[in-house]
Image (cartoon, rainbow, N blue to C red; front, side):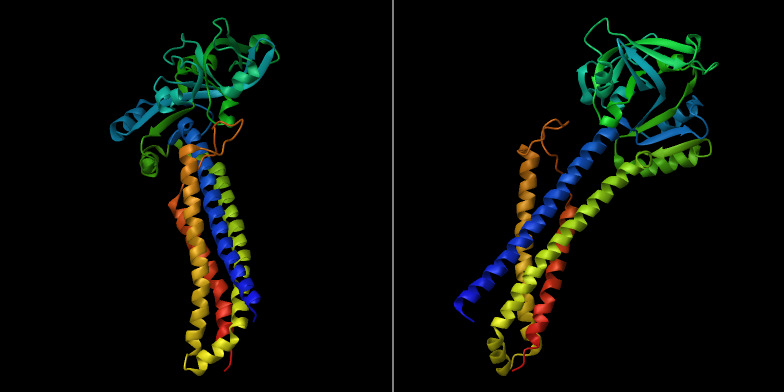
Length: 389
C-alpha cells in the first residue's frame, strides 16, 4: 500500500482512540451529573422526610403512645423522634385561595428537618403550643397565596371541615383558624407547593384531633443504621403500626432515578459500541495492508497465535489509552465543576450543575469500555491469523 493509505489507517486508528476517549469522558460526566442531581433531590427529601415513619395501620390518625417515644429515646442514641399531625385544608389570604397540607410538628422538628438550612425568608416559628399560631410556608404556597411574611398584619385563614359534620355546604360545618406566617422554606417543588408547618397543638385543635397524631417521624444521624433500626422498630411495634423507611416512602422516585441512570448508561455504552466499529475497521485495514509482512513473519517461524496476538494487542492498546484519557479528562472536568461550578443553571435552586463522582460508576465505565475494546479487537486479530504464507 502507498504512504497515503498508511497515513489514512493511522488517522482512522487515531480517531478510534479519540472516540473511546470522548465516549468514556461523556459517560463519566453524564453519570456524575445524574448522581449530583440525585444527591441534591434526595438531600432535600431526606431533610424533610424521616428515616423511618411510624403510621396507623387503619385510618389517618392514631393515639399518642409514650411507649414508642420512650423506646426510641432509650435504645437509639443517634436517633430522634417527633410526633406529627397533617391533613388537607383550604387556605385563604386576600383574594387568593389554595388547598394546602397543614403539618403540625413539635419544636424538635425544626432541627430534625434542618429548617434553618432551608429557610429562605423570615424566621423559624415556635412550634410549642396551640396559642403559638405562627407558621412557616412552603415557597410554592407562599407564591400561590401571595403572602407577605414580613407584614405583621398578614394572617392566613384556614378552613377545615368539622369532624362531627364533614359537609362544607354550611359555614357552621367548617372550623376556621388563623395563622401568622413568619417564615418561608424551600425543599423540593413537590414539598414547597404543598405544605404549611404549624405547631402540633395548633393542628390538633384545627382538625379536632386532641391526643391524636398522624405519625411518629424518626430521624437517624447515620444513614447506615436505617435498615437496622427499621427492623428493630418493626419487630417491636410492627403488629400495631405501619412502619416504613425513607426508601419505602419515596420508592417510585428512587426507582425513577435508578431507571434513568441505567438507561443513560446503556445509551452511552451503545455509543462506545459504535465507536468500536471504527476501531475494528482500522485494524482490519491494517491487516490488509500488512498481509505481505504477515507472510514473511510466518515464513520465519512465527506462529498463528503470535500473529493474532500482535493485532489483538494493538486493538487493546488503542482502546486502553483512549479509555484512560477519557477517564482522566472526565474526572478532571467533574472535579473542576464541583469546585468552581463554571457551568451554571438559570432559574434553579442551585447556581450550577451539581455533580457527584461515584467511583463504582467510574469503575463500571472503565470495565465497560475495555470489554468493548477487547471485542472490537477480536475480529481483526482472527483475520490476521488466517493469512496464509
